[in-house]
Image (cartoon, rainbow, N blue to C red):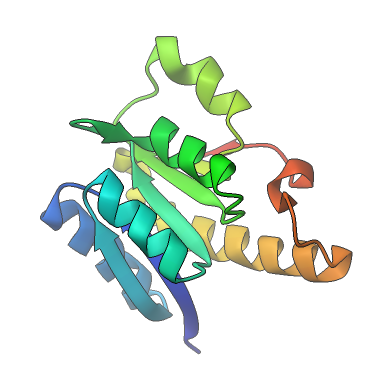
Length: 147
């Protein structure tokens, strides 16, 4: 069975983006995968299409997960964001827990990305459908999980 989702990947490294997409497709998660690597393209994409999930790299020059979260909040975009990172820097760990990220996946545990995407997207869809929520749907979603 294949699940079709619209996935926005915020990633500056083409190889990392392809790896994430390959892992998802291999486990039956297909659909539209759009990759952006800068703020302007990210804003253009979130205005042009509603995505089921945003997968964001931790940090790259001039743009990172905190800005992704900030833009989504300011634009009233309620799409769950999954962060992919090498490590959990101590100075950012508290910010990550308070940020409304849907999940954090460590790169060394990337094999769990398909399960995380599936759980987050299905939970989000069930939760928003059950509540009929059109505004800040992430405000009541269970707290961050780290894989």
